[in-house]
Length: 512
Image 1 (cartoon, one colour):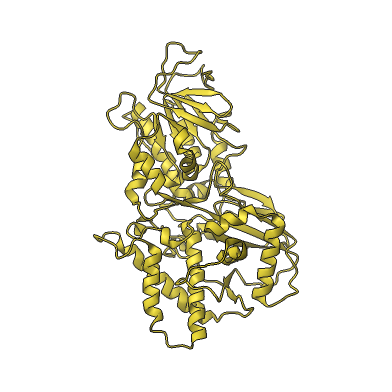
Image 2 (cartoon, rainbow, N blue to C red):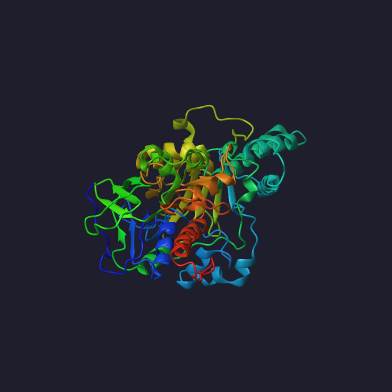
């Protein structure tokens, strides 16, 4: 195989390290390694034309919209993404305030400003508050099964449904109100699917659910776009470290590969790209999304991964959550409205949807956030998860716009509501190097599988240590699905290599 020389042949020797993927995990690892003198030969291989991975801010509607990561979850001192964003001066004054950092949300989404029912009437706020309180108290209870010997049922969904059906049996209102309460609860189930990045809460394992750790702080956004953060990290790297449009095809490991430019040297790993170029290396940090690993498990590693590692990749959950942005000439919502909930009156968490996706995909939409007004532009951001979200990706812009216009006319009771003037949406499932949004602990898996995925190869005792290392949100046991989990995992793997090269190294604390 033809191999391509390193960027730094003329520089100090040091091990040759490759990072695959330039999301925040890959960039975090690269930044940490570049700051250490033992790693002059570092390269980041990125499959696409841009860095940032699932952090993706785009200019649109006269402002910036987040097609990927939206919030800093738990912006407080224990959150490295918050710390970095503050250091790079990317946050607003209120988000930096001590007061904001102390708020405990319990990881729950705030209440809607207004709730529209599918019959075109507004739902009483009291009823929504009552159902939210019930739903989130049950979610809090699910976290308590963590240290118990065995959970009563396998999934979070089954537990919630069992508890709700018991409560519902004692409701004394008329049938219409009882049905409405279940429909409101169904909307909260859909919200939770978006939060967990899953098609159904029946797929999310109950026993390990409480292992996910919620940090204090009121979730905040980046006024200039989340990508400002990855751009700042990228700007701190030496020039030409990142090679764009270089998708990796196969990682050959546990070998002894040569390179024309340094004939005396042997490398245990050879990274073969789709275009035929090969990069020999001593260490490779894999930061690709779990969705990509699942799809390419059989061909991405040569020899194949050990059975336990491959099994962990298969078992951990990975689902899709998408956003649909709609721009309006004029707002149809009140000036202080921040979050519009949509309640489908014929739905219930206790009943499964029977009709085909094409007719009802939009019923999985949880409603819309009102984006802060850009220069007199009015934008709603809808969230949708699961198979419905993946089906939405197969439709044309026109079809999505038409469906959502009909939904909005129906729920507002205004048949003449003007159609949105434009739309933009994410399509994370069809993205070939992502294949979904983020991970969750699925029924049949536990936090041990996440730790297994994070273990370097070859396993202990091999002569060439740490040939392949694994980072990314799906490798962080307590912060999976988050940007801070991804960043910490990149730092973790960089520190592993620094400690190998320089056992005396004073590693920075994890929050630097």
